[in-house]
Length: 421
Image (cartoon, rainbow, N blue to C red):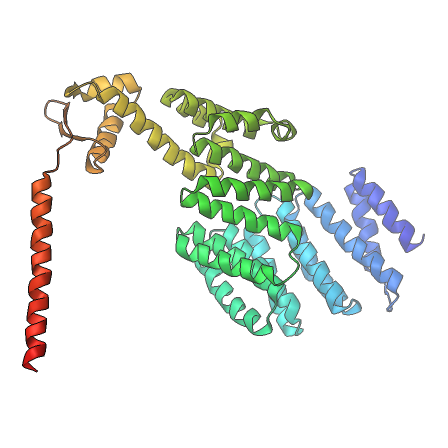
């Protein structure tokens, strides 16, 4: 049987889920001596990808890791560019297996060392970029920043704009994860500057737009954030990246909810985009939007409980929904407290539907933030509300006069000192 026929047969067996037969055929192809035969080299490349797909299908990440190590000697038959492409492809395959992130990091490190020994500079830089991404996913933020700084220094000397864009973007994500928003924005600006000097692939442009939207949302500029999320959604939707397109669409909905644009939220939820990505994720955002429209804490908490996986698993959604919940709680408390000068905290808790401890804590915070004026009498469990104190304008005017007099005296002293000279 020819190698080409073997590849087709292995592919058919893999598709039919006859994994054992497919594995035998792929391994037979990889054991052949290619002798610089270009057609055999191409078939071995297909066999490597096919066998890695088989390991992913069976979630055999240990075997996949071993396989990546075993195929490296075969790379001597390939050009450096093709070898780099294959190694990167095999490492990316780990993303399709479960609970394999630590192993993927170890394999990437091993391949990086192999690239250094073989003086494969461009592969090593690509693996460094992948390693930064894996550190970010693994929440190893210090390792990610250290490696990014080293790699950026090297890339700036080489003026590799494409990798510079990718690494600056990753750096921005890492800084955002550790809540260093100024540095996250600086890194994103650097990424966009590098991207402007080259043809930016659609997937990278969509990633830049997504990160821009996330950072604008952090600064509560949800109108601008929505525009970036929409651009990211269009990009991912065109690329048929359904997972990231869905995330972008959820962020679009989140932005409109935070802007209190009820009509826009309803328009999005009844439009063609919502139909295309219908499912529990969209249902979760619909429930949050409904609770927000009704100003109902009970509905909000029910949505968070019913769609815990969809809402809590995304750190961006989780963060802003926490803010939204606090705002909604404040509005509800103010509405209850407003008619009274004295009211029992237990009565407020009963009306709101929360525990006395939760209500007392939130009221204390609101008083400290001067949302309203009052004191909590914990002995009797009563909230005493004061009218907002009126500022005495005479006092402010007197302070301004004293300030101006001080300035005049300072000038007189300065002029006198100059005259004596």
